[in-house]
Image 1 (cartoon, one colour):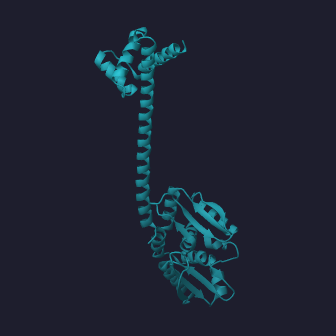
Image 2 (cartoon, rainbow, N blue to C red):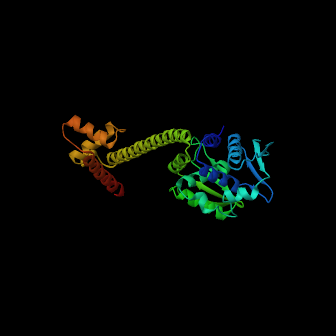
Image 3 (cartoon, helix red, strand yellow):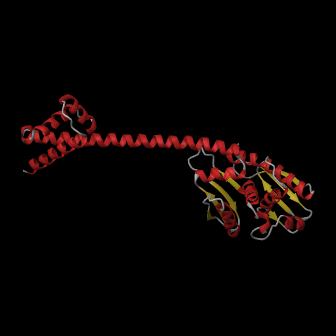
Length: 302
């Protein structure tokens, strides 16, 4: 079962007030087929289908007709189709369903906004498993005005949702991991939140470790390149002249660099300080090698 299915299954089992149920059902029907004499609701999730059937029965005392068909998509999931042929006008009025966006009483306070967003997610939302390479939550909607309305509801909670036009439909999406986790929390899907956060923290820790390892590797490579350059400068001086033209401190640095070619500048400064009983800092050693490099360049030019 996908993470989306598990999340919808969890949300479908939650219980709310009558008004919250009306808001949730309003969102579900708004995003389905509404005709003059029929309402048809389609979902691939059996728990969502049961939830819709229960809400219709509870609010309107109607038994929706349920048909199960095998889908035509590549994984051939079953489609659950709920049909309503009675009280159409009463249902639309009670649920505040209009052409573009619902009546304001459907989303009049925070509890009702969350309920409405639950309904939208149950019927046309999907969320990537956090184990995948990217964090992504989306709602697949068919009208631009409605998509902007849903985005506005989401951003009421600072979820930073965006609207994208995609093949004659509109996608409202959220990319940030923390915002997706906040959305799940708002929906009351606490098991999904715990799973999501566990995976997210693990991935973030793994990414941080990789970044630190990459940084350390880069520092090692940089240190090796610097040491190789210093050895080339020393050999150039030995070839074109002699190390005796260096000052005592510079000659000392050259001798120790040849002796310890793989040591970093910090390690070499500690070795020299320990073996000579004369304190030399990394910065001081760096300046000695700069003078050696300058002298090597001058000898080459001559």
